[in-house]
Image (tube, rainbow, N blue to C red; front, side, top):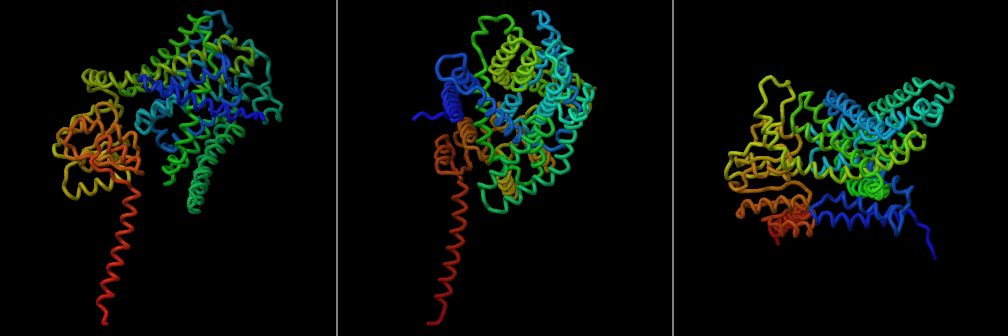
Length: 580
């Protein structure tokens, strides 16, 4: 019996091939993203063999974007975004304008119309949210100043693209495309019977503003209340379901009712939930789904790619690729440096924004549908996106390798008349401690360990990636290094060779294994202590060289049994003291 299951077939084929080619890419020291994209090309319509459903794949990928932006929102607050608005707003607008002009110039050189040039240029100017956030998460930069600037920059680009998608049909006739009525942009305009382009713009801005106000005023009260209510039921299943329902429901409602993108709606849902103490649990519960659907996003991008364009339009493909990578990077770098921010911030933004993704595909599709953009333009955008996404991890690799040197050179050239409040991030200075403990992570577990070390007078330093915690530790006279311990130069600056203990209080077993291996190599006699959640994780970390691995569940059970045993022994002693 034949079963017509395109949804299951698309998910199975996409994830299975992504796993195979992602593993191969990792084995070859390449980014797994390249493997995911190749998997998409293989199951796409432009290669022989199995062809996945072309309509379902992008929708599955959109779920990944929603969950990813929701997770990012959980780590942000309105204050975080407000703090970087001075760079994010002018920066994003300036970068998009510059790259749009470059794209327009290329389109003009190929003999396209004005409308085609505008659509083409805009499509090359907006970075992929998924690619940027995955890169920042891998480098553990989300909660740093650079990460906050990048996310705020993405939000401004997102808002600009929402306006472009709404206004493009209204301007289509003027730009040489199909004639459409602006009234289709919103039911309110249709009701009022207006055809003014300015009315479309006004209504769009009003709807976006209404959504933001609704989320900030009502959402900040209702969403945390719902989550706290569900948490008190004691059902983990209901809690996870409520988190997913909030993320997906707010994203969908924001798009349907307010014309805001799914990604932006999900981000605001996460941001208002971030004020709840349950936000960390919500982030952990959505992580597996975020990863799975993010993979499907890259697979869906690969499915759109027609490899034959590399033969048919090689020169335009190269030009498009250079505009995406070099144009966006140069614009971001120059703007960030002009506004007085550090070299490292400028390089991070340049690397993050030098690729394009989901909004570019949506805008290109709309342009083709309105007869503004030729189909060749859409193919060039797809080819440029694929190539730029593949190259993007290489840019971050170069940033990791050469960034510290460039930053040090910039420090030497810097004079005392720099912009106040925007000084470069300090270089990581090697510690002068010896016989000390190196504590990685200052969360709930790490903070308790630090209290004990402080009480015993044991010198120690903390490696932590949250700026507020590092500032608090330094204010209390505790040496702290800001950053991810896996980053190049962090462990070296902690003087592991002269340390007595290396304590990893972070819960990630894969990252722990890497850190333990590096620590053991740096100091074979180091006493290494780590945490785990299962027997398999204990075995994994001991294999990498951990001296002692504490499993939380086991210690909880030991505490409970010790209490019971002490009670029983006390009861036995009382029984023996009774007269016979």
